[in-house]
Image 1 (cartoon, rainbow, N blue to C red):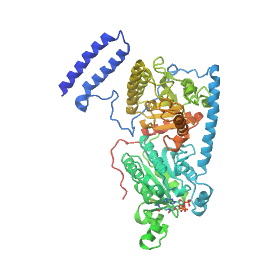
Image 2: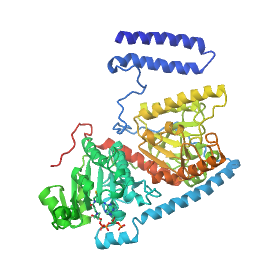
Image 3: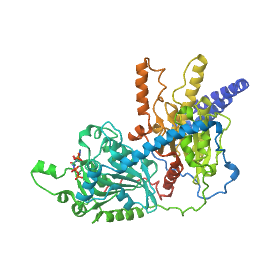
Image 4: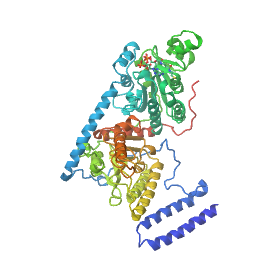
Length: 610
Ligand code: COA
């Protein structure tokens, strides 16, 4: 088999030489294709006998989609060459003023909607539920709990608007706050039920949000803290919560897998942990319970009464004393809530991390005003301005080292820093053509080779390219192949990826630009973003009658809004354009922390408590 493969490589090699000699003078593209084939063949020659596969990607590594545990930068600081990162021109042309102003008007409307959503979710389950929670049940509100747990309020909340505008109603923050904040200097994921929203019961969107938080924790190796205060499944929707792979049970499966991956998990039982909810603390590595507030049971007192006729108090059935003194389900007994968060902070302080000294190097701010991003956020595809104007308002000192500046110019690629973290930027600047896709594929592989995280600024075309002639059909086929290549490069790149949808997220182009299906570590939307197969107003070629066109357009108008998307948790949240740099910097710091966990590579089984 080995000889056979060598021969096939040889033959391919000869063919390539002939192809190159014969056709390069007529078609310069053929040289690029030929060199690609050489690389593939050489790779095949070296590796196929071991792997047994006929072809593996150029950047072959053991691909682990959910986890990236590789080092991303060297610890030794090198002198920075100012010439390596030239300042880019961020001034916009006066002739584009009207485009800027139209975008700004739209962004202000979107910002208003953002603020209204924010106000709504800050109220949780409403006044009555808050009174019941604090006065009758004597519990602390979820945001105050986070204040006690975290070092400061500078945390990254994920998908705060998830749950708004769903067919089964508005579920503020999906009844559960998730995000990443610092505990004792360490970035940790938190998953905190809000019991003012229907007793903290889990709706389908709550389950989805908890699972997303666990995926983020796994991808970025984040210690996780669960603040459990939940009545278990929301029974009327049980068929959408219980049976499937990515339903409630997956939370517990993930807990075990995370533990085996050496991702520490701690639970604080600060309310009810009923039915499925009872497994969250019992599968955590350490658990704290609050006296008179925390309870853990599979079936509560009403079920005991129905089954045996016996009357029992929640405290006797599954309270703090029982679980810390008799069952051993929890490890720490806290008399009050604040003590429970103190215990948790102490637990986190024992985790085996060696964090670097605080880096006091002065970071260069962008030279251009970040508020301008409101006028650069395109209200529709036709209102997109040069994406360099956006990049110049995000990167340190507005500096950017462009890659392949003269080729495939509808995609901008290059290197920059955000608050000192080096990144590779891939940004739409027009349609994702054949050349742009090849360039994107090349650049993504380059970053993967060099272990540089990728930032995708996505603004894809509103509809697929039309095939109106034979020549167009050929060019569309080439584009398809090149986009397929870029998708492979993006899917298999094992560096961290962050996507920000700054305009459109439509059709196949959005996959190559690392849309949700391509598993970026984080994906955010600007409030002006549109997420749909086609943008509104672009369905005429697909439907027949005026009535159908109107109907589809109305549907696309509603369903493509950033708020529709984020309500369904297709992203990690809507962020304001002017906050983007701050959010990106936080994400990059969070992603980097995994480098400081000691002995993370050792294989372990999950921690089995009892
Ligand atoms: N499914 C659907 N709705 C539920 C629910 C559940 N599992 N648990 C609570 N609710 C609803 C209540 O009906 C109430 O609705 P309302 O505000 O429209 O009146 C709301 O959630 C708050 O419940 P309430 O009991 O008033 O609040 P509380 O904070 O004092 O107690 C619980 C919360 C969760 C401790 C308590 O409701 C409880 O024990 N629920 C049953 C839990 C259970 O057996 N779950 C099994 C699920 S498989």
